[in-house]
Image (cartoon, rainbow over all chains, first blue to last red; front, side):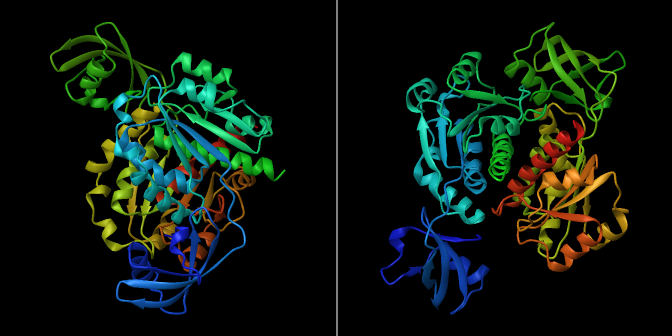
Length: 248
Length: 248
């Protein structure tokens, strides 16, 4: 935990917060912070700030909080992800939040098994704490917005909207020659929507539909990666390409 | 499994192989391959090839094998990794082999806990099958060479050898401004040794020692990542930078 996050309603009017859960334990046992010591904090979807320990009393910790004027901007990459096995998805939530995504659109595809949808791993009760864990690791406050879509066609044709100049649409494809970097440079976009397919790949029909709606295939190297490894690797490349394009 | 790997001693003189383990199950139940059908295969640390199903008999499968003349080259990146928690290390083996590393040097550091060394996760019986799983995913045959080092100082000062032109030495540091890409370009090296520190970071002493032995600090973005996510992200950037430098 490199940053301790609170929800807005935990902050009392006077700017203090009192906690007695795992975060209090972390402050006492890992940070070993006593009265007067500053701690990096943040409000979920709000600004970062500094908390000063006012008191440690048994299992409870009280902090005086001061927050920055503005909140971090939303990560510039959104992820359209054909749902992987629940075990893999569960591992991914914290990693995705840590590496930085604005939205996570979990979607069905021909090679996604039906039962992948009937799992508690897709419930906010499961993924919200994992996303917060990832944000606390990465010192971010912006919670990825998660939505689950049972029909790829409806999502792509009706819900995504027109492909615009603002967001490049990339389709991860192990066989593609075009690199993430050159696709981002060519698009001149400031945001990116990255589509990552199921373990067995998209069908030709799905790939053509995505291409017809503005997605450009991008490859990595001639290595087929598991869905979770591929997400981390590709999001890293997209972030780097956007940052380099922005600094030019 | 995008490639089925055999050890060299499993290949009989006539170029046939008979198996009745998980690989046979995969051929029968996932690939649904009957007699005459070709399957992508490889020899661990040897060439890739094609196997033709000769017979399927109960739980056992016999293949006729034909191999390519040469084997894939070793991935151009080695990883010096301060040992993470055993649970994290266990998850990493397959991912590292999939993303491609030549050597994995697991090492102690001030902020690595002693008990991380006393775990079956560091035994070949544990990690070899996981590395093979990663290679089978990525269609590679070259098994990463693993070594475990209890003293960072001995490794860096005595065992790594002189920093040469052949391998750039990079030190992952969340606070560094220099990018992986520019460090690789500047070095003009064809290989890279990437050092990734423990969750709590290197100490100043350790960082200075690594700098004194040719390591250059490289950063990513202002996000602190968990050790496993950081490894995947950084290895991706190093591979991409080496590939781009090689194609220029």
